[in-house]
Picture 1 (cartoon, helix red, strand yellow):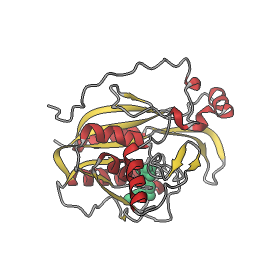
Picture 2 (cartoon, rainbow, N blue to C red; picture 1 turned 90 degrees about the horizontal axis):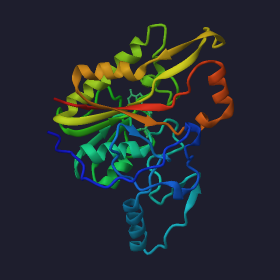
Picture 3 (tube, protein in one colour; picture 1 turned 90 degrees about the vertical axis):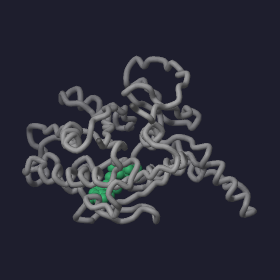
Length: 302
Ligand SMILES: C[S@@+](CC[C@H](N)C(=O)[O-])C[C@H]1O[C@@H](n2cnc3c(N)ncnc32)[C@H](O)[C@@H]1O
């Protein structure tokens, strides 16, 4: 039985999109709809962040208590900094859309639950935890905030079966140069000469560690994308051919060794590059696909 079933609510029926390129792009803040639990396995939201009334109120109160006037708003793109309208840091390359974490925590955790993010980066998970009154614990090899502890996620400094939920958004192979730390899994190529063995071995170590710290019966979410690239020679020059790396299915297969599969969510990506005419043309002419979605795998520890 799922004792994390959400409260029933009346869904609004959205207008269908004619074509993916017609989807609204996040420009103005007014376009952010209030967050509700999504009922289907196709998740989409027009912004990286959501507006957090709870966070905004708390910040306002804190300033008033200190006898200060409400802080003037600093606007960056579609986010208003310091107002509770940004979770994590959108400038951190590879930051997770906060609403994905919000969806997971709203369904699979309760107030005061301990939520761990072993690759916490800019702290998006911690901000969502604060909004939802969960106890967020963050680790990363390249921590962007004081409260995130520097740690290799293959060995978590946590007791066995002490955690209520784990969220993780790992490097998708070598896409992003996160740090100079040699232990960064983003330095391991999932399409490398070793067939990606080092990358998947490292990720299995992380997944096994998540399994160790999670309480029985509790859940984890892993957010990831597949990868595709043109082939290059040893000097980095493009050569004929391409490589597809099914990172999602490979990680899912590893997780199934340890966890029970609960569901697979398809998360629509709102990457600006997907709308660039030259990228779309190259994909059509070169007969390849731009990556339009991420997986969010939901697993339960038996
Ligand atoms: C996709 S980013 C996570 C982004 C994060 N969820 C956020 O919203 O800011 C992947 C993170 O994994 C971290 N990382 C890579 N290898 C690691 C390891 N072995 N242990 C801990 N963190 C690692 C990187 O430093 C990077 O911050």
